[in-house]
Amino acid sequence: VTDAPWWRSAVVYQVYPRSFADSDGDGIGDLRGVIDRLPYLAELGVDVLWLSPVYPSPQDDNGYDISDYQGIDPAFGTLDELDELIAALHARGMKLVMDLVVNHTSDEHPWFVASRSSADDPKRDWYWWQPAREGMTPGAPGAEPTNWASFFSGPAWEFDEASGEYFLHLFSRKQPDLNWENPEVRAAVHAMMRWWLDRGVDGFRMDVINLISKRTPLADGRPGPGGLGDGSAEYVCGPRIHEFLQALHEEVFAGRTGAFITVGEMPGVTVDEAVLFTDPERREVDMVFQFEHVGLDQGESKWDVRPFDLRALKASFGRWQAGLAERGWNSLYWNNHDQPRVVSRFGDDTRWRVESAKLLGTVLHLHRGTPYVYQGEELGMTNAPFVRAGDFLDIESVNHYAAAIALGAESESVLAALRVMSRDNARTPMQWGDGHAGGFTTGTPWAPVNPNHTEINAAAAVADPDSVFHHYRRLIELRHIEPVVAHGDFTMLLPDDPTVYAFTRTLGPRQLLVVANFSGEDALAEVQDAAAWAGAELVLGNWPDPDPVEAIVLRPWEARVYRRG
Ligand code: TEU
Picture 1 (cartoon, rainbow, N blue to C red):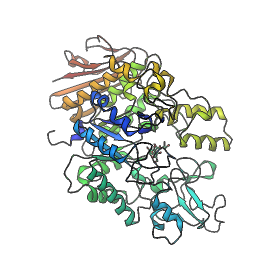
Picture 2 (picture 1 turned 90 degrees about the vertical axis):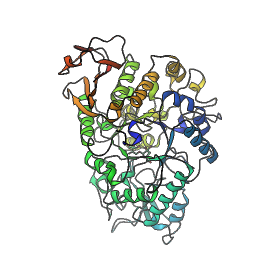
Picture 3 (picture 1 turned 60 degrees about the horizontal axis):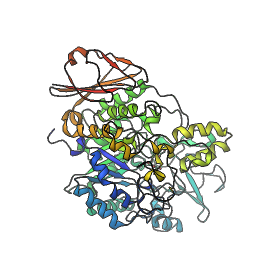
Picture 4 (picture 1 turned 180 degrees about the vertical axis):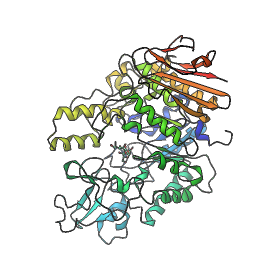
């Protein structure tokens, strides 16, 4: 335990700067706004701040389309302010993690501008350029080099009239994929990362980092709707991914002293792959964001919304806990800027909003792994009341709506899925108070503030000792002071119970029991050796005056943490 990496007992807080706090009234959050709110984050007790992209960007995908890796977009502030943020965090004993988006750049990045300028430009090979499919007219429908669909609808290839070739973009057409086969690309990324570490940042959250190695030659994927195919088998955890990450670690981190943290965002990653990525001896990344649990209420696509089954969630988390028990490490998250709000998704955002938000926090934070809190999650912020197609702003939602309508879908059914799954749900402004624009800006916010800010806001939550905020604060504190939370083994209980989530954590003689009722009715937690827990201390709960431990009757959305030994 004593020589365990520091981030096992740390909690990370994600700031989506555009929606966090606006200091200058232009309606867009900024770095000054983040600096001003550090006392709030310190009160919550988080150890690390992960900042979504603040680099210069055309903002086609809200900053995940970067046109300069070594600057700050004027909408967010200046490099001096970033330095000030680093210093202010370090002064409080906190750390800064930057978002590293190097599967792709913006099409306005000078590298791509050069690459596009001519077929024999020295940077041509920094991206994936390919001719039309054999025997087809360049630019004609279906002539794309492969059948891959983009994550943001339509083909993953864009035709370039000037050179008669196509470039690859797994995301928007303004996010061309870098060609990691080219050693110059890898060296440029390594140099950029070293530059940020030299500036004082403490690590990176690596955007879709398991997509950087493509299987060559690029080949068609499994055919899917609209004539497009699923190319994921060709680029998810591709053939050179471990080599690329090991080289990155070696070139960027080896020989540096400091307490760093790296987390690879990895859609489609399996437990077996995650063990390889996070085994400390392999020197790749410290932990990965996996997507299994956030796919459980989705079918073939994220827009195919399915009912949520607690047993499936327990089976999934249980498998990840067991798979990474000996080697590697889990990251734990419910929310980020891409996911709907968890209290609306797996909780009850009406009658039991406060209870279910606390329950969800309790269950997540008591697992083995490093928890991530997304801005507003600690307030129990909910999905937004979007109505019409025009209410959706995110490129993924906007493109999906247009594509689905073009394929003949009925507007109302497309909207029903968007309301539940759209990333816009996560991106409404942070609710600081009950006044104008929820205290986010003095001007007009770039995205609508949820009308429930009159009730759900940071000022009210900080003032109320029974709020979701203070429950999260206690969870974070518990991780800091109780070693079994960070280091203990995990054992899942009651896997087949449809409403009760129960598990133990064990470190030597010390044990925790977590029981949680995922329903609005009373539930009996039929923990086998419940009697053995008689006399155990209740360390945390979300209902007043719970029963003695022998018969654990849980009230609606009740969660309890017991400690013994
Ligand atoms: O997301 C990658 C990803 O796989 C998904 O979460 C994606 O956002 C989409 O919802 C799939 O349906 C990362 C970033 O977190 C996301 O914001 C970016 O849009 C994307 O990469 C491209 O950089």
